[in-house]
Length: 477
Ligand code: NAP
Ligand code: MG
Image (cartoon, rainbow, N blue to C red; front, top):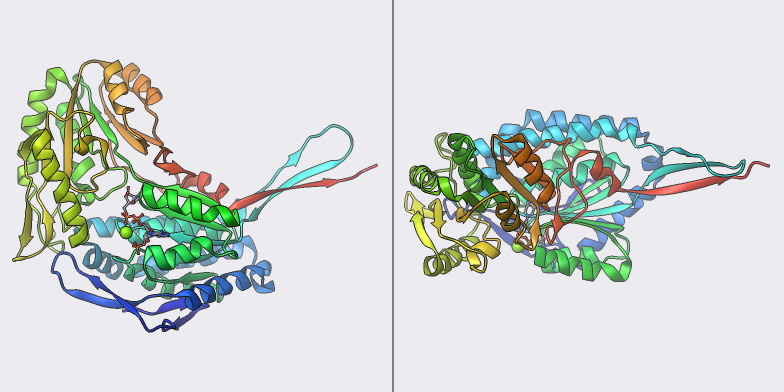
């Protein structure tokens, strides 16, 4: 297992020798001690990325060849996907079957952007007069990617794959809880043939190592996924060096069940919308809006399903609810559950639990009679806790859906196509799922409105965040 800093295609010990522990949240065992990058190390990583970016070798590498390297990285990852999935489950606590989906999507993301590398083109612009005007899309430069612990490698690939495809070089800082798959990915990138400095991985605390990247004058862009509070701080800190910033932040996404929906699939969608990934999913459908006339049926089915969803060993193939990512996260979720008990009606779960006497697990929890103004409705819990709100009619449904500072995603369950269109148009969110939930594809842009951030990951859209437009005027008399 790699635990050093990966800088300029070399494994280095941190200048200070400091390390941080990575803990398996399902067993409470220490998995590894990884390096803590301090100023000297951060400077070295940025210098490596900068000098690669400016090198003749990198400039001479054709976009098609860069694409081929990314494609090769995808193949190498596919060959190691089981090992990678196991490592992800160990450090994050998620069921192995989910980690396998994450690994498969990461391969897809690498190969999708491999295909884009030689298709990032400008255009010829018709202007008044005889001059010939064209645009090119040039790489923005050195990108620092800072990512959270919920989909550690997959979310990292959403940043580094389009960045490399566009011709940028990358310094990746994974979350302190889950750095191990990013470090393993460095081995793959080197084997794929990326030159020294193109892809670097440094580990360490967010407010220290991460903040140094954000302030570093030789970093051109920060691609961040994480909490809204840290996103705002990054924007402030990035202002002095006028860094480009894209932010994928939190959410409190509404999942709306209309009375005419296929209730069985709607309830199944509501369940996976909040309990997949232990609810540690930025787009989790954490506010379930249920139309009044079907409220009792929905609550009955949902509570029955939640009670059956018993937390288990992530490596047991039957487990569908793993361990919360850390003790600190578990405490934070439990404090929301305590608040919820005082303001709404608990209909399922509500307790911390262990598996084989260990680990930071929380039961699948459902609160009924929730309303805006309650903490469990207004704030992002980021755990397996669902708040059910009752509404009456399309207008009130959409109004409640939008009654949040966030705008990441939303779900709509209805058989009425007109209603689906109207609700999809009315909801202010970056992704709307109709009669489905939590679907992602490398080609489909993903990101937020409002306090959920700006800029998009995935799809062609993400490439805009890693390029600058250059306009060239050729004077022709
Ligand atoms: P977080 O505290 O914001 O951390 C995210 C990353 O930022 C980590 O690598 C963290 O390092 C680093 N960081 C923390 N403070 C920093 C600072 N001052 N400067 C630079 N980097 C800093 O987020 P979290 O609470 O761990 O993650 C959960 C949040 O992420 C939720 O709010 C969730 O909604 C959001 N999220 C959003 C998406 C999306 O696509 N929109 C996806 C997943 C998660 P350390 O780990 O060392 O603290
Ligand atoms: Mg954190």
